[in-house]
Length: 264
Image: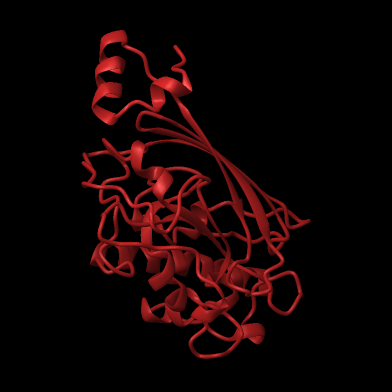
């Protein structure tokens, strides 16, 4: 791949497109992320992520520690590609019911809808937001490792830097597992018709923005969603479309069966 100098990248958008088209060159952009417990949920979790965006191809690697051992952790890009919406990582002020935890419903107005599900295989659209069987699992020491190359819809690569990543799942009572005794039942899962899922499993554990992005740095224009696996790149509301809700419920049902097996 031919590299383009920082000077060239600083050119106005039109001039840069002319230059790139004339030379046939393209340049991958690299971003770093630090994911921490901005919510004050006492998750004990933190991660670093490295992103390489080459056109509409995303290569992402995440390394984390302090996660619930031997447990799956849902993770997503959140936010919006629309210029009239501004999102950011929530802090403890998002805890509206004062229970000491920012849950999924309280966090969503701050960090926005799922844009991209960081699954280990298969679909990466918002419909896989709670595909627990395809989310990364922390090892016995609570370390989490994730690496995947994802082909994005046309135009999404240039806008990815305006989003942020949220990882879910924490161990509130320190017994190295998700259970109902700690925080009770997940109200988010229950809203999808799935009972007996611990709140620990769905609460956000970390959040982080792409370096160089900010809550006020929103892109203009939309994204062509195309026909790939990320079709429907921006969810309509809190998993508001029926397909997303059914897919989420299915993933949580799988996870509930797993929990039942672990208790035996």
